[in-house]
Image 1 (cartoon, rainbow over the protein chains, first blue to last red):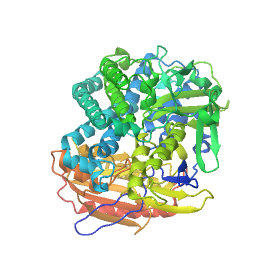
Image 2: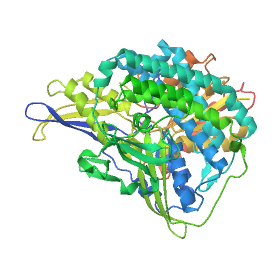
Image 3: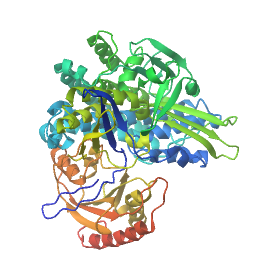
Image 4: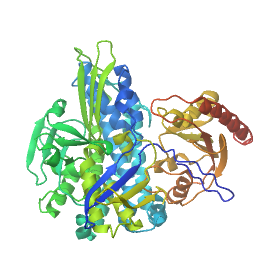
Length: 484
Length: 152
């Protein structure tokens, strides 16, 4: 939505920032007014898979970027990885691998920076009940301009990594089935390296800031919306934190490993997608645990606790401190996502530094191909969590089947559980209050959902909450627009 | 070197008339080449403050669902209450720019092009295309008044 303010006149343009979807929450009460269930609805179906099916496979890595305005690079790379198998190019060349990794870690860095500085910081700095005008990046810029400036510069650095590898900041074409269409030149590497010390410094400050904010309110934040679930992510074959390529690992809510070393191409043997009549968003679960107890979290908090270590030293020190602070027990507090996200941001900056020193980044072996296959699966750890692209391609190059499981869909049940827990604490009576909506938003925002991606929805993200009694009767409702 | 005029358009070309901003940007690029800088994104984001420096004028271009077929209005820095969404408003972007970037803010205008259909996979609608042509005419007329723009 564009709502320019003018000293002389105003024009209002209806919501059209069609990148995040909109949310509706229904709280179901029993006869004692106890919240028994929370439902985060997605109410509009857009049919992304059908949008892809019938297209030539080589168009897909570019097309899928338009599924999501928040993390288009993740879709670009997941599709490319899936189609590497189709063109017989898996593994791709070392140069293609390094270029894609630089694009990916640039995306993670800029996305985490936006989330922390734009969305999470105002909540944490100014309080969950602060007035809307204080819970915005504008307020952050006014009260802590240096923090806001760091966020802007981190974002720009990540965007530069994307631009130099994908060709453009948006709608890039750098990654293609079988590899990449350009390497990074020495001059481009030098330009990025020049900014790296500042980026690392800002990233370290960010981790310190979130650790301080979290530590100061630990008891309150750890009780907020906390609901146990499993954890799922890629990890490296040696157990390291791995965001671009690896094997699937899942743990239960207590940290016990449920599956490990799973080839991502075999995801369907281990992950199933449940459906519910009230939402277009599916409910993935671990097959071994069943739909009732097999839900799991994905994203920074899951990744940080699923891996055995982080191979970059600064982030590893922060991970070890995070684990020690919680006594080695799995953390399920949604707001701990923010801390994990900042540790990953630091890790991304360190990995980018490694890549900029890697001579393969400027190699000339860009594209490979081999025997054709009819099917490919690409799995990547997008900023918000595990992203699965699965395609079947006909001999005449057309996509005949497409299945996408995006991060927000994986997190569907944990988000519902977090909402339920927050509502149990903050719903007073039958009427949703402004305070309740504020707290629900904080819980939802911690997962950094992208409802457009997950639900194929169109629109902004206003929040509509309904409270219903045991018979389904509407007891109260309230809507909050995204502009307060 | 940055051109004195920037067109910063946003929207998703795969969502029907949501692509009016990017379509407008593409046409400006075709007509003006390097004389005008063109930037397309899915939405306004905080780092766009760094694209404002050194400009004389910036046109923000987005699709709209209501109002006149084409609206052109000045934009002023405004501390609006944008939150929850990842996207920023043009006024909020200018507000942030004034605080975090040590440059003089350019003269900024918002060009809103009314669309009609926004479905996934749809092309620009007939109404959207007609309004796009009107918007280009309005833009060129407005730009014509900017006689001090050295590279135009």
